[in-house]
Length: 120
Image (cartoon, rainbow, N blue to C red; front, side):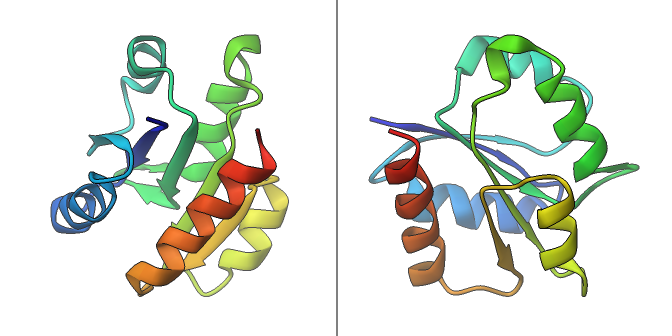
C-alpha cells in the first residue's frame, strides 16, 4: 500500500482525511510541524498532503525544509488550504497539486490518485 503523510493542525480535518484514506493507503497524520524530518525518515511517504498553515509555520517553509534533504526531494506534495490565494501558493512552492478547502472526498481521492499515478 502507498503511504500518505498528512500534515494538518486541525485535529478534526486530520482525522477525517485519515479515515477517508485508510482503506486504500497507509496514513500518518502530524498535527504539528516541528518533527517532520524524523517522521519522514521513519515513515517514508509516497505523498505528502499539507495544509498551508501549521501552527506558526507555513507550508513554503516546511516544504523548503523537506526538500533540503536529497532523500525527500522527489516526494510529491498536495497543498490543501482555505487560503484565498491557494493556487498561487501552490505554484510558488511547486506543489504537484492543490485542493481548496472545503473539498469533497471525491476530489481528494481523484487528486491523490492522479498525483501518485504521475509519480510512478
